[in-house]
Length: 137
Image 1 (cartoon, rainbow, N blue to C red):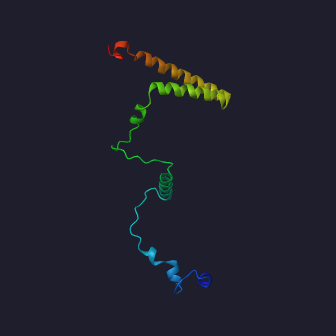
Image 2 (image 1 turned 180 degrees about the vertical axis):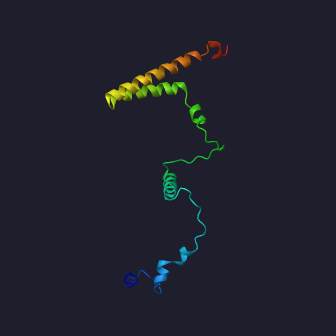
Image 3 (image 1 turned 90 degrees about the vertical axis):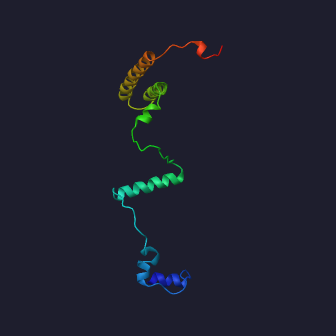
């Protein structure tokens, strides 16, 4: 109660001094309604708060999906063979510049094999077109 008296002396509390019960259980906090239950406990609550803070600060953009399907097929469709070939080439260069030489060599050789397989599939699935399809004559 000494702290309350000090605040009153400094004109930080106006009116009558609150009782100890009013300080420990303020009227504003008594009826807060029902809180939604988080099934994951404290970790789920902390994760939700971090997500909301990230959204508020603009680090994360929340996108509502039209369908509730959580399949990763849509993400796989958006990557083309050309994109994969470029990514493999970039990873090969990065492997040689950074990291453990033996590990980088192993990863680089596996990426070359994968890149060769992608090129082979690309050539097997390629169709021949004529110039007349591109230009209206």
